[in-house]
Length: 86
Image (cartoon, rainbow, N blue to C red; front, top):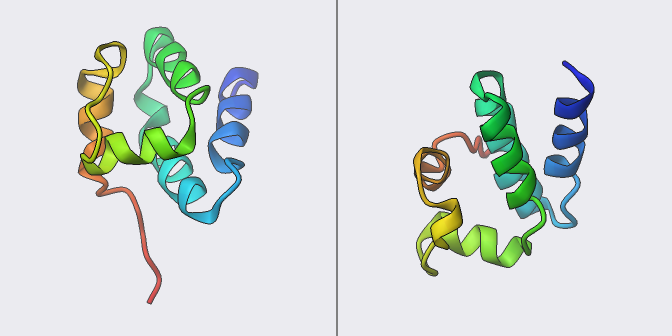
């Protein structure tokens, strides 16, 4: 994993709450291998947003801003990457 991806992974998995870590970090783990430079930049921008906003966009309680609409957010909103241990 290159330096940029390592930094994105760290930021994705260290959000501040367990729920946000699982959502954002889980998304990173599931999808980062297929990202090009544009996707990396978009994810880096997403990481600057507040966790409550990211989570609301993912579960559909807030409208996704136009700048984040597209394939990445569509994948994020599926939430099929989150593994819950029972």
